Amino acid sequence: MMAIQKSVYLDTTIPSYYVDERESLSFQAQLTRRWWKENTGQYILFASNLTLQELENGSFPNRERAISLIDSVELLRPTQEVVDIAQIYINNKLMPHVLEGDPMHLANASFYGLDFLLTWNCNHLANANKRQHIAILNTKLGIGIPAIVTPMELFREEGM
Image (cartoon, rainbow, N blue to C red; front, top):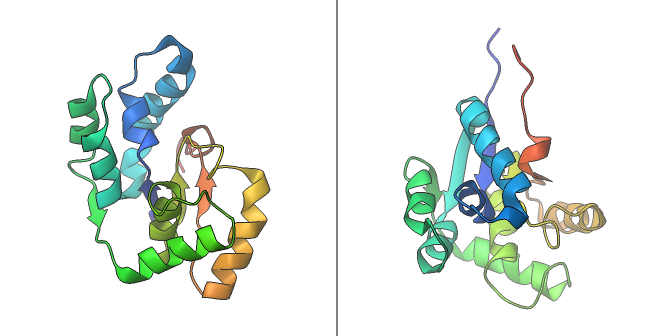
């Protein structure tokens, strides 16, 4: 019996941490590289035009490597529905009052019904205190509720 591949949305922190060489983020960077090398073949990966834009507009070392990391990842196309969902997150005080970044990443993963949103953003996304609020809003909107996790939480067991 073949296992069904789960879908993973990559926010900007994943490719940027993959190439990060700062000592202060070495733990997250090492886990991100390990997850990428050991697990990407077990998932269907997605990102968005926003992920690519944030990487292109960033001013950090190894930016080009981060951009090339998502070259083979399918980019979700922007829709008005995704923008509207992100605005609902902001209006309901789920996210900061900026219609880009975090609310758009969550709106993309939710609207497209992806299984996971992979991030190192533990303030606004991978935060246990936000899970219930996200579940309530997405249920009211009739859209998916992705599991929002860090690479540390998304390793697959051998032989699974």
